Image (cartoon, rainbow, N blue to C red; front, side, top):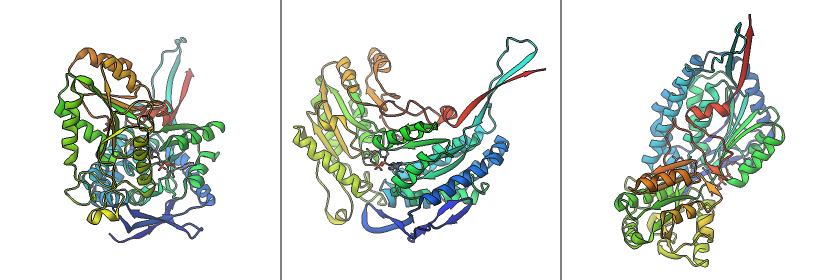
Length: 484
Ligand SMILES: NC(=O)C1=CN([C@@H]2O[C@H](COP(=O)(O)OP(=O)(O)OC[C@H]3O[C@@H](n4cnc5c(N)ncnc54)[C@H](O)[C@@H]3O)[C@@H](O)[C@H]2O)C=CC1
Ligand SMILES: O=C(O)CCC(=O)C(=O)O
């Protein structure tokens, strides 16, 4: 892949920043390899992007939904032609394995198609009036200009699951991706450019979070902001947008539990724990990080988990034999090391891993061994804070009631899973668990694009993304009363 500098995409044109500065994106599997560079943009350029989105709004919302849908279908088709290149860029830019990157790119394509079809579906309800001679109905209308602020861990799927519904419901968008995923996002925008959206409908601007992200949150012409990322940044965005009367949607961290009941299928539970906890190097907000096991099978489960975890191959995501890639960036690598040290300091026992990997080519990347802590208690930092790395914490309980109480004993509430065959346990878990995604005999990660996605407690701002739920955020309702 040739290393390239990508411009902003504003008003239908690729434009370099007047700052003259770029941000380099490097390969976390090989620190010296530059994957590409993006613009370090200024507030003036952000103002221009928002101005273009505002200018394009009226004509875009006045198109028939099916016409807007055609642009989304077109973007999906072009992305499909470029799937290999987008996925390769993703693996090189943020480290996830190539099969995962291909899967994510395909998911982005399917999301575009799902929302393209939405342009032909109902946009309101007929509601009977108490006046027999009147006709009353509700009609969904767009919110306006939408600011989209996204993280690096799903650099294709997250921008698309926010932009596609925004666009189909008649909004225009300004995307600010995380710098560590910006080159991949630029590749998606090359497809959007080829799809021929009218100028100003889709805009892409890169730069620092505190300038461009904060600028989107503060901008009075940005009617709504949708964000995925860390809690501190999310809360600040919510406060900023809310204070000026804008609409906001925040998807933030998780500290997701997987409960292993004594009657479960242990092999399936072990596989789900490893896949849900360590795929994507533990860098999903839906990753399992607390493994809560009933005491009767604790030792048996642990033994099997360690046995299988030892077989995990760590390496460059471009290598076909790699199961787990590097941490996505130096910052993330340091964060994970900090939490591993903290776990040891606070008395958790390291059952597996915990070290940086430096053998052979691994020394060139941000590699950490799959790490499993034993004897973790709920007061420990590693049982409370989101690590976003390949670290699992094993916790022992006597009963399922204790397990659910422990699972709920964190500030987050995104996803939670239980492995059991007992219907009573399943029913009490569904009822009592504080999580937006409730998974039975399945890993905590992995969401379906047609279903609502979001968390409880500190994990989200109570709104839901994806599926039909997206309509709530990206539209507002007019109630129309017609008297003849
Ligand atoms: N829920 C999730 O999917 C994600 C959670 N995280 C969590 O966040 C931690 C830190 O990761 P980061 O990449 O630093 O996340 P972050 O929250 O700093 O970044 C997410 C997005 O917000 C932007 N941003 C940063 N500062 C901003 C500000 N002041 N105003 C507006 N926008 C701003 C960033 O440029 C990026 O586009 C991770 O260790 C993980 O725990 C990170 C990424 C995704
Ligand atoms: O589990 C998934 O597929 C989605 C995870 C996610 O949305 C995230 O990490 O931000």
